[in-house]
Image: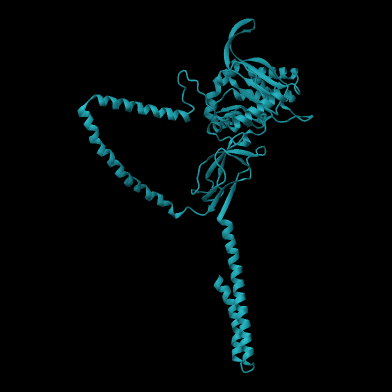
Length: 452
């Protein structure tokens, strides 16, 4: 392209030169020399300008696209920073498009940082366990395909054993030295065996320093300090905020689980075969709560400043325990879902929680929360309100107890249920009525079908 552009001004300027040389008889020799000099200067200038116009954009593009800085991605509206949990790559490593480079721990979930382009990592702008803000520079990429010299390290691997070969010769020379004391005195062998036994005892002591899961030694009085992760810190702040903000009060009731357990026993196999999902008790309590919330909208409301916000929908937050802490994924529009749809949503969130793949969008929102402490054997408890919501329903363990049924004592599977509510917006009458309606629906699930 450059040679073609250069040829055009030179060709155009060569024609007047030829004309001047052929018509030298009409002009004096000095005039011809002056004209030739001016045309030569103009031709050189035109060539330089053309070359500059072509080369300058090309060079600027190379400089602009050679390096690419990846910034901390946007994670959620309520999250402005996070803790860099770990780097999966180091400087000099090649990363493909959408390959995970690092993970950032936020107040709710861990966010994976994937490379938006393919290239080689040139520089890392943050270290592990450092706080990084959204939009800040995270690492720099040198764009391009995988380096052709990537096979070079493979050639180095066979060289390593060659260098280790002379190291193996040293123990061979020491072997005869070990045989000499064996012939002289057997007592020395005992000392050596004792020293060998004591040596491996040192290894576990060094490993136990970093391994917090190792059980303490008997009568140990040691202490270990572990920094709280961001999720645990956020949980602690929110729970304390809930206790300091809401006028919390808890009311209780008990539910006879006989009919619901029969319903589950009769249809769990059919549901599993047709819908590939297990039928549990949580879906019944979600639907029973939606039924009661329609009758008592204040339990589904929240306070914002001096206003009360009533929701015409029911987004149920289901408490799920994870190794890092308690998370509450949201089942949206639960009032419009069936039993099977609710069970599928719970199963999906449970799988995500186990794999650590719950997204921030799964946790946002929620108008009412259900916590099932019964799976851990809890008999009774007072759950804490999940702000800015106004109430939370607590389920507990099912235990057989003696109850009076139609004047007779019978053994029934019973469960205590609790409702912690914000007394600023919910009165005792509404809270008690809510639990009674949940109790009626659970003890007679047909009420959900008849809407009575």
